[in-house]
Length: 319
Image (tube, rainbow, N blue to C red):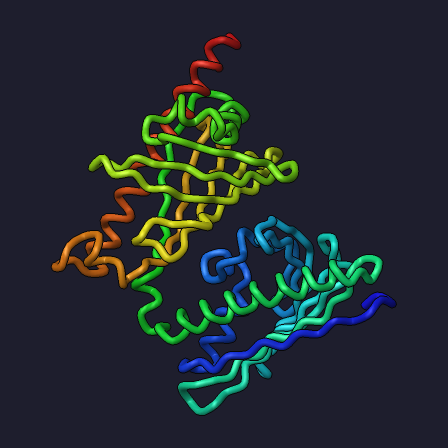
């Protein structure tokens, strides 16, 4: 830590789930955007199984922040220690520990500790960081509790899938179409409205109205992180439709011997309590899985096909 004043916070919750289940959810940082409301995206930069470096993006008090962290995982004692190596202002340094303490075979106590300093030891900045840490920690522990206590059904409520199209055109043109979301209301028929801000290069915050096949309109809000060199865009919906408790996704454009493949990937946690409200009294999780798969796949495949047509038309102009 730096020479400035060290601020410390403690958050804890008792969870009616085995300690190993809770530790597993904490250890799997790549899934945090799906499990933890503030987290947008996690890139694993290095890992040897017990130590890892991560690049993380998350929302904090309405802002998108990113930082790099080192984590040490100890499954034997069910502890995960972390230390930010590159922090986001006004944070100067941040470290902490996740501690899972068994309370019998089917219960545990989860403790989350933070220590931080702020740039210039500014009192206002320290208050902001403490407020953001408190808000995010409460959201993380609360959602972790809900997921862990339903752990035996988690595989039923979580789903991932992808759709792909082959493109006879340049990868950069496909990426450009997907990146320029401000143009989608004119180019993508199922997008009725889209508001976009870019708080920093490579980060897009957007609100979008999407039309469904039955004519209904869904409003979603998302944060996107763009990797132009890799022709890749990842995103997290921060405001989701009624049937989804969480939704993350990724657009990737790859090249192989046959040309270019554009892929849309989705991961979803279903919101079971809204199924009958949306799909009717006879519907269950199986019907919800089919509905979400078809709705998301239909819209993303339509967007991929529009990107394909755009890229192939651009390829023709280059001939």
